[in-house]
Image 1 (spheres, helix red, strand yellow):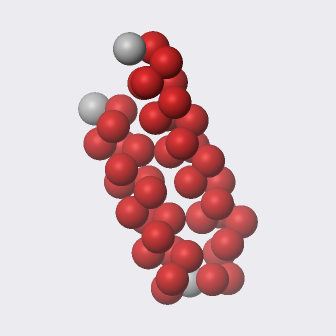
Image 2: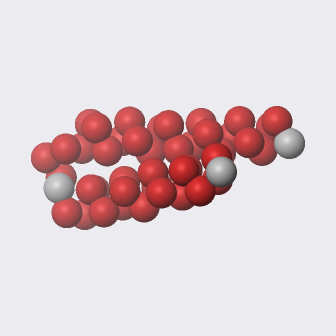
Amino acid sequence: MIETIAIILIVLWLVGFVGFPVLGGFIHILLVVAIIMLLVRVIGG
């Protein structure tokens, strides 16, 4: 479940980064959240 949400957030980040550069700050926050979720999943086992 967490991996799916993280993958969706990363895809949204890529789409936003390419399509809407004006929203750069919000898009990067999504990326950071996705990375944190993946790290929690990997560390937590």
